[in-house]
Every structure is written in structure tokens, then in C-alpha cells.
Amino acid sequence: MNVRTRATTWALGLTALLALVVVVSAGIGHVSIPPRTVALVLLDALSVPAGASMTGATVLPFVGPVPVPELQYVSLFSPSVPETAQIIVVSVRMPRIVLAALVGFALATAGVVMQGFFRNPMADPSIIGVSSGAAVGAVATIALSLSIPFGLEGAAFASAIVTAFVVYMLATQDGRTPVATLLLAGVAVQTFLGAVISFLLLQSGESLRQVVFWLMGHLSGATWDEVTLLALVLPLPFVVLLAHTRDLNVLLLGEEDAHALGIEVERTKQLLLVTASIVTAAAVAVSGVIGFVGLVVPHMLRLVVGPDHRILLPTSALAGASFLVATDTIARSGAAEIPVGVVTAALGAPFFLYLLRTREVRSP
Image (cartoon, rainbow, N blue to C red; front, side, top):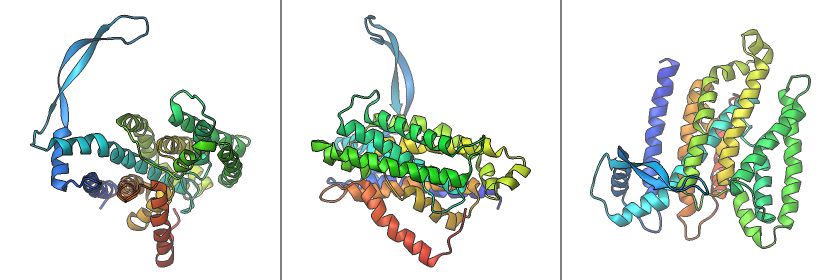
């Protein structure tokens, strides 16, 4: 079986698994909804544009109403579903479930790239300080009651990208970025940012609980706006990373061998690092710091599908989506909701230790 066939087969199977997890998750909550009803509600929500009309809307300040096209949609299916179930599934649970899937998708994708980039199965998306940088921006916004354009998410994303840039510049000398130097720079910057976060926690006062809740990772209060934003950000970086999976495979041989095989090593490393950092920053900005997804999922899939990134990257992304949807369902289904980051750590750490004890650790 060739690589493309294997990748397609695994992707279809994991997509089906994700669909099943989503349907089951949408039915779990204080109001239980049967999976069949959930499936009918989701089918009813599928719609396509059926026409358009012009409506007046104010699109700029001090400008009167101007004609703006307004699309009308028609449902592809029209099953009979209870209105209460429709509201609960579509308006309450699905934004959170879809956001969990996108965040898990992003973290697992970045985890695969970082493990391949550093040639270390213990690497994760936060290894160069992106998550810590996002945390500084978010914690500062909450603790100091800052007014930031694009709000908390904008502050977290911007500070994460700045942190990645600083780490890269610290590790780069004479146009080269040694992987070991990049790793050490990331550790040093993370330590410094940890001190900054601790200081901000002391200044947080009454907002301490909100800060701690964000740092633990959460998906509560998810909206379709956040889903739309993340859905717009992720596709292009993912396609870029998917297009460079062969280069990532070659880099595993070592930089000298990769150069001999025609890879522009420094340019490729820069592209992979920037793209993975954007993916991580976007995910952390909307969900807080959620650990172990980008570490456990790629390692687990590597044991199953092998180290070829042409297969490992898409399969890990889909598995990461299912994993985070499932863990977030556990987080919100108890008597009191707990941050999903607590659940991923509680489940991921023992499982990862089990893998280390029972299976040989495969290097990327």
C-alpha cells in the first residue's frame, strides 16, 4: 500500500471517529439527548445558499444605509427534530465541541512538527515558549484590566508570536539557527516568562480565579465567532505544513544530509517554526494553556502509523481533534465543570507513562 493510500485510509477512519465522538459528545450534558436525535439536528443544520436579497445596512460610521446582499439558506435535509434539542445542540454545545476539535487539531499538528523539528519525541508545541508568551499576554490583560484591540485573544496571540520571534532571534547567529541553541533559548525564555506570570498573579487581586482558570486551559463560553476565527486561521498553515512533510522527513536524517539532498535547511526550518508557532498561538489564544495534547497524540500515532510525516501529520491532527472533544466532554459533564487542561493532564500523563513502560519509544 503506497503512502497516499495509507494516508487517505487512516484519514477517513479518523474522520469517522471524530464524527462519532462529536455526535456522542453533543448528547451528553445536564439534558441528555439521544445520539439519533443529535444526528438529525446536525443534518437539519446543514444548509446551502438558495438566494440573495439586498438590504440596507450601515457599514461605516457617519454613512447612511447602503445596499448589502443578504443570503437566504435552505436546509439540505429537513428531519423533524424537537426545538429544544435543536437549541441545545446547535446554540449551546456545538460551538464548544467544534472549538475543542479545532484546538485539538491545531495542538496535535504543532506537536508533530515540533517533535520532527527537534528530532525528539518529548517535544511539544510549547517548547520554544509560545504558550508561555500567550499566557503573559492573557494574564496581563486580565490582571491589569488592560483594554487591548481584539481583546484577550488578541493579546495572547500577539504576545505568543512576539515570544517565538524573540526566541528565534536569540538562537540565530550568522544566518544559522542550531536546534540545540533554539531549544536552550526556548527554555530560558520560558523560565523568565514564568517569573513574569508569577508576578502578575500577585497583582491580579480579585481576578485571580479568572487568571488561574485561563492558565489551566478551558473551552467554556465558546462562541461561533471564536470558532469562525480559528477556522479561518488554521487551514493555510496546515496546508503549508502538509506540503513540507517530505522536507520534515529529510530533516530527520540530519541537517548535512538534508542539505546534500537539496533541502534549503535554514529556510525550511524557519518556515516550519513560524508556521507551527502561528498554529500554536491561535489555539492557545482561544483556549488557554492545554497540555499533553501536542505531546501524547503525536507520540501515540507514531507508534501506530510510523514516523513518516506524510501520514503522521494528518492522522495526528484528526486524532488530536477527537481526543480534545472527548476530554472536554469529561470536563463539562460532572457536577461542577473543571478546566479541560486538568483532564488532559490527568489522562495524558498516566497513558504516556504506560506507553513509555510498555512500548519502545520511537524517535521521529
